[in-house]
Structures are given as structure tokens and as C-alpha cells.
Length: 251
Image (cartoon, rainbow, N blue to C red):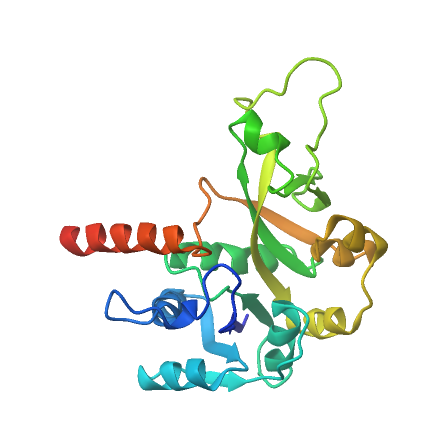
């Protein structure tokens, strides 16, 4: 299976403007993400998708591949779909441009989910929930799956709801899962998805993946042991710098 990794990157960010071009490590943040993608065994192609010339110039400066897109896309998925329309591949991984610490093995695992389940149009990841505060938080997206690992529903509400007693976060296999915002799509389905109107459930929960379930398509969910931490705020970037420095010293 030919897998293209597309990295959507915008300059505008309400909490951390210009974050793809942050360079305290000597490398652009977008460069760290790009290099992680190149390490994935599944990757037949890696492309940064952006509408900003500054980001495009930065990517070209370190030898990366970049595709300029329209500026009016409502979501990163639409930006990825525009690029995917011109790629020769079977599947597309949407890797956010602010995930510099994501392991290449995670990308390979995501692609493997599509290979093992030919009936799924998409694949994504989840991590076991271990704390009640996480389970109850509307800022944390939860997912429940069927016995074959396909998503039944995603919600900001605590699902599955325990009617009697308290949720048991120690049970094996894990019953409570936090969804991670990393996706692999079959290319043809991604192009169809970008043309679909929003689903009412998507509009209520503000979760784009509900457009997929609402259309009757299947999403395979893989379970990983820990969540990857993105860079959304200045504090996140400082945490990344600390971790990066520790890794450099240990190398």
C-alpha cells in the first residue's frame, strides 16, 4: 500500500502565531515534524500542505517537499484532500504540523490498520483513559468501538456511560478510550469526504469524524499506550524544547 503523509501547516494560530516557523532548536518546528514523517517505513511520500509563502520557503530551505493550497479551506482535512487529489497513492495520513514528538512507529501502526481492515475507509488511534477527570472532560474526545475495533461513536461526553457505580479504569482490555486526532484515509474516500456536507451530529459535537460515521463509513481504531503531545501554546513549545534537549544529551 502506497501511503502519502501530508502535513497541513498554517501560519495563523490564536494561541501561538507562526508556530511552524519557531526555531529555538536550530530547526523549524515544521522541520521536526517532516523529519519524523520521513522516518516512517510506510511513507512513500511526505508533503507539507500550506497556503503561506513563509512556511513554503522554510520547507524548501531544508529540502522538504511542499504543496501550495487555497487559503479558504475550512479545515485541515480539506487542505489535505486538495493535495491528495494530485498524489499517486492508496492512502493518506493527515499529520498535524505541530506534532514534533510523534514516533514514526505510530504512523506505521496507523497505516497498518487500513491494511488489515480492507473494509474501513479510515483509521485513527486512541489511548486508554486512566483518570476520571479525563473521562468527564468535554475537552477530551472519547470513542467507543465494536468487537472488531471499529468506531461506534465519538463524543465529548463520557462514553460509555456507567449507569450503576463508578467507571473501572483498570479493566483489561480498556473500556474507556480517549481519541487521538491522527487519521489515515483511503485516498478515494478522502476526496469524497471533502465534498460531503457536514452531518448534524458533527455540527452538534463539533467533531468532523462524525461526518464519516454519519455517512455509514467505517473507522478502524488502534489502541496505543500513551498520547502524543502536540504544540498548541507557548508552554507546549517550552516542554518540547526541554524534551528535545534531553534527547540530544542522551544520544
